[in-house]
Length: 99
Image (cartoon, rainbow, N blue to C red; front, side, top):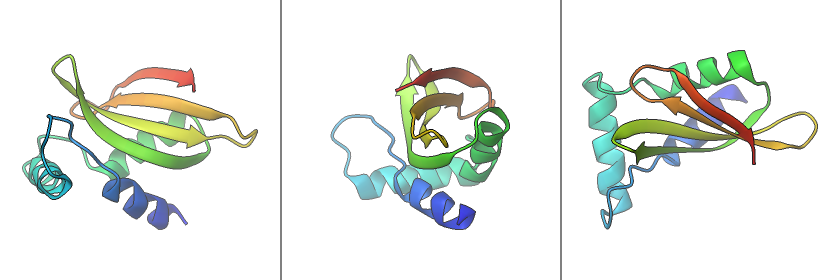
């Protein structure tokens, strides 16, 4: 199950830089990961689970104020949806809030 979430989450990654086709976004994300410019999704998911348990239902990679951020939506065991932002380079949790 965890592997399925990782695959689904990775396929949902977006790098929002305006008007770029999704395939190019995925290629860019792959290259940044390969070059070590961002942490792998597996590491980000591990960080998120240490803070909040539940099912990851969506993952996006966005640029916010010049910082690359993984934005996760997590469904907890009480059916509440949480938004968690994690710095894609440092792995620091930037924000957790109920969505």
